[in-house]
Amino acid sequence: MSPIVDVMTLNDPLVRASGPVRAILDKAMAGVEISQSEGACLFAAQGPDLPAIYYVADQLRQRANGDQVSFVVNRNINFTNVCYMGCRFCGFAKRSDEAGAEWLELEQIVARAQEAWDRGGTEVCIQGGLHPKMDGTYYFDIVRALKAALPEMHIHAFSPFEIWYGASKTKMSYRDFLTELKEAGLDTIPGTAAEILDTEIRQQLTKNKLSTERWVEIIRASHEVGIPTTATIMYGHIDGPEHWAAHIALLRDIQKDTGGFTELVPLSFVHTESPLYTNNPDKVRPGPTDDEVDKMHAVSRIMLAGHIDNIQASWTKLGPERVQQLLKRGVNDLGGTLMNESISRSAGADHGQELTAFELVQMIRAAGRIPVQRRTNYSVLDVYDDHDPVPLAPLVERKANQAPLDFLDMFPAQPTSMEAAQ
Ligand SMILES: C[S@@+](CC[C@H](N)C(=O)[O-])C[C@H]1O[C@@H](n2cnc3c(N)ncnc32)[C@H](O)[C@@H]1O
Ligand SMILES: Nc1c(NC[C@H](O)[C@H](O)[C@H](O)CO)[nH]c(=O)[nH]c1=O
Ligand SMILES: N[C@@H](Cc1ccc(O)cc1)C(=O)O
Ligand code: SF4
Image (cartoon, rainbow, N blue to C red; front, side, top):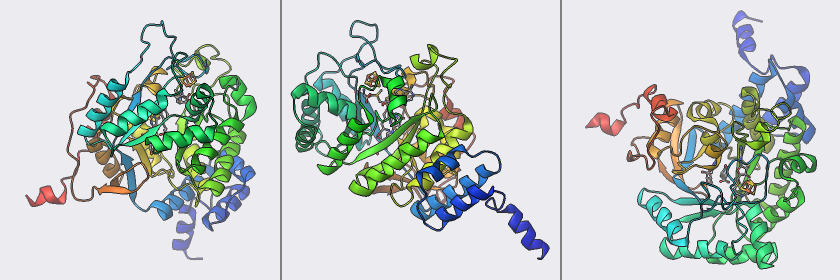
């Protein structure tokens, strides 16, 4: 062997992986599906196996998505935080008589959506608590009011837990409830309330109020009536590699039947103000470790290859620097501008309420990729190869010490070819 070949071989991260991990990764590189137990082996991997896993995730990302990294210009509207379901991880829910309890009337919801539209938004992402005094028909009213005012705005709304609640309150089947929502104008559903799809873990997180079986039933019904959904996993608390592999394998099985998932969004557990952690700091982990965050995105990419080819990183949970690093771990999407993020912040996250399209574009370019503004269904609206989005003033005042702007100063935008020509 010539010395040059030796050097190349040593630099190949696959060569340094242990035998079992190498065999799984070779399979994945050859386009062969890996099993749930092989996924668990990758999730449990350590040391020199990690660069090999990241290398394969990055290769599969490149095959599926090329150099493009997408985002959506959207606004979160959390129309109420009043909720009595008592999920232990949740810092967002309040009792109706508690300070900070909120309820938005239809006109306020429409006004926020209108403001988002005027700032270039194409999607509203609507979720709320399960307010005990709310009629199940309010979900229909929200969608109808929005469609009447803004027929072109994409409505991404109501988690499977909210669908369960609306269907129970109106005494409708999931299918009928979802069909009526679709007819009213609902476009897609957030696949939240998944947490960890495991009976024992859910018992501890949520007292199993929405069981794994029920979550799957509602997601399947949604896909069957023609409403696509996202898929999520909330990890880094009382869970581990076996749960993650089973969860991702279950999502993959559903996708093989329905094709209804648009993307996977791993949600790292935000612990600082989450009662799950603050009440049991000895038994609950303070969110995932750095390696676990990397592995979650990379192994999801590998297990879901060819089935769910959009892996989104959540800047509101992780911050802009971290999601930028994850673009090398299988991630091809940075989610939304959000405009008003409150769920992660109520659990203690400190990454602000909004990233503008301009900021997302600078972040993606600084990572050496091509920024793409997408619609919710991943069709392309604009490719920022030779121009910038209009830099908007942030809707919400930023805190002086907030990360995104400082961070962007470290990566001054390159002049675009249009600017250079002027
Ligand atoms: C707050 S709920 C709102 C919608 C609805 N009430 C529900 O539970 O489905 C939306 C999602 O936020 C996520 N979430 C809540 N608290 C969190 C935390 N401390 N860390 C990370 N994600 C969290 C969970 O995945 C949850 O399903
Ligand atoms: N990851 C989080 C999101 N992501 C949702 C996206 O913004 C968007 O609605 C989706 O990509 C549609 O395709 N939203 C949050 O509020 N919090 C997150 O952590
Ligand atoms: N990412 C979810 C929405 C979401 C909202 C709030 C969160 O805290 C987490 C996730 C989706 O669009 O499907
Ligand atoms: S996660 Fe949703 S259902 Fe559970 S307590 Fe929080 S707002 Fe309520």
